[in-house]
Image 1: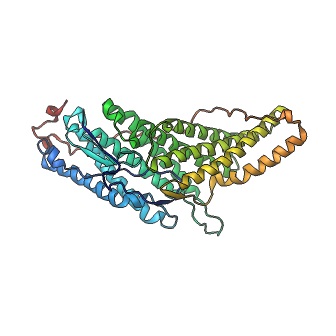
Image 2 (image 1 turned 180 degrees about the horizontal axis):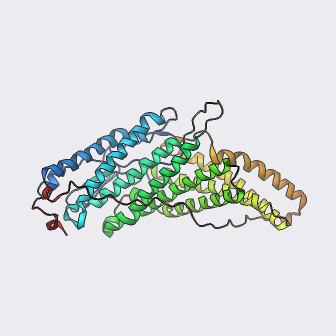
Image 3 (image 1 turned 180 degrees about the vertical axis):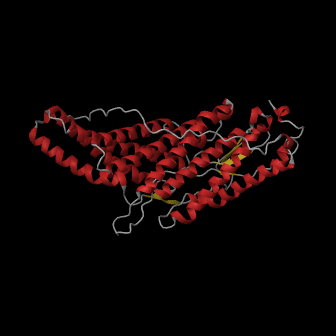
Length: 422
């Protein structure tokens, strides 16, 4: 149940896109913005004035904040990132968290109220300018997507390098890196809940007509790439640690490949469009190739520790693959930044700063040494298969909140919500 209205992309100026989004350490989808809703007209005959006004006030706060601040949230500059941007994100997240328990009253126990309000959101990655659906589960899904997106914005702010007090190259503190991993897991938890617990509540017809921003494949891809970025941070911390072995680093790099490969598999055949969508696709492809460079590099170093001609030959092939993937990733990075809206890479730090120096250098020296020692027949022409590891990083186990106590029987006309069941 629930009617669907999708407006074509040329229907108006609702979709405001910045020409540039500044420095990007973490990909943030374009923010979907809610449009105003008249709860009084839709629910006035069924609910008390107090609950209708509460719904209206909570949602209006989100509409205003997202509409005014949304475009600025996706534009990041290193100098101001921890000031206005951070507080705006926290305020909007809090507004969404306050709204969700009250919103869930519309779907409690299968209430017919879930079909009474037409919710409208402006899309970013879909061809349609906006999508309206008369189903409160669509609103819940949109809220969770926005909450996850705002957390990715928070992580991006934390992972923009700052000029250090010692005057050396800009870097990201260990405290910020650890905090970002927690944020990635929380964001993935919202997305995982959306896929497993909210999408199944929507009828098949509505699911087919969701904007691509909320398509199951896009939600799964966002969840997987969020986990992949968490592993990237863990790998960077392992690189900085004197205690982390090559085996630990290889495992993390190989896990990262699997997350990004699965993310790419989920969005490969989806009709992502309108700038943000194409930028999303390029980002996933870039990070997938970049992660393969890291994985083959560490796999090559471990193979080179072997004492046989075969292991040394495989090591050379792995390192050459790492070098090729690294070169390809730099081209994809340029393509990502050139896609609209334009973006920039912050100064290199962490995993890729280290690997950008080590991969070309180590590949060159190992290839030269091994080619001096062995005949060309001993050098493999194709890279060895990467080892397969189980994925360790999981989304937070986020559960939808309990329905707000404001949904008491006296707030439902007729004294009980049971008469509103489907």
